Every structure is written in structure tokens, then in C-alpha cells.
Length: 190
Image (cartoon, rainbow, N blue to C red; front, side):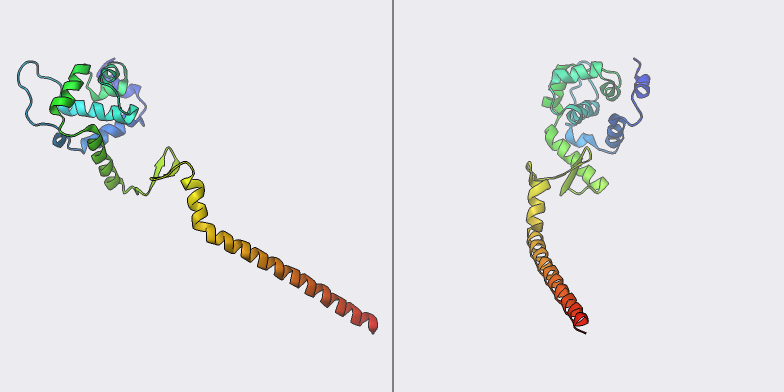
């Protein structure tokens, strides 16, 4: 498959296009060593190598260098990033060991901070696939615990108010019955 055809194979809303657009506005050179070995073959573009690793981190989580090599050979989004080149597992290994200044986790953390800043994302509550989670939550924290703890006083007030309303209703009913007896009793007596 030719590189130009990659864009047509993927749907227009594929996440790779969003990723590539975001990467255009990001300076990746601050994560890379400036000096590059001039001996031998030219080598792969360092920014492209970093983009492949970052996309794999987003797409698959942490992956091995051999999987990165396989992805560049077999998967269209990786071919698009790599511009049709196929770096080997050894290339990825030497890139990470020799040219990368920071860890992928820290780079990814910086990218997430940039996303938060650009898109005005609140970090208190996260939305993942349309589901709402608290950023520090266990299995039942968001659904039950917080709701109950926050509204516990309201639940107690609700129970107290319900009991008071029941008493008022019983009193009104009793008063109504007594009033009806008095009215009917006076009519009968006359």
C-alpha cells in the first residue's frame, strides 16, 4: 500500500488524524538529545520515532520494541506516522536509550497537561468513553458513598419531615372527622 493511500483507507474521524494534528503544535525537540551520531546511515527522524512510541502508548498502552516494529509493518496508522518507513526493534531500543531525554511516562504527562490547558478540562472529574468517574475513586465511591455522605443529613431531614407530615395528616384527618361529627351532630339536633 502506498503512503498516500493510507489516508483514504482510514475513516476521516480516526484518532490518528487527531493525534497528528495535536503533534503539529507540540515541540518534541525538548525531549530529544540535540547531537545525533553522524557516522553510518542517516537514521530515522527522531520526532517520528517519538510520535510512533507515543501513539502506541495511547493506542495499546506500554508495548515492546518488537511490537512497535510489527505495528509499523502491519498497521495503517503507524505506517502513516512513520511515512512508510519500518524501523526495527533495535532502532526503537537505541532511540529510547540514546536520544530520549525523559521517560515516555513524563512526556505523556506533559502532553496530558497541555491537553488540559488547551481544552480547559477539569481534572476533578474525568470522562472516559462517556462514563463519569471521579479522579480518585474506588468501586463504589462515586455511585453510592459520596452521594450518601453528602445527602445523609437530607435523608434524615426527609425522614423527619415525612414523619411530621404523617402526624399533620393524621391530625388533620382527626380534626376533619371531629368537625364533620360536630357539623352533622348540630344538623341532626336542630
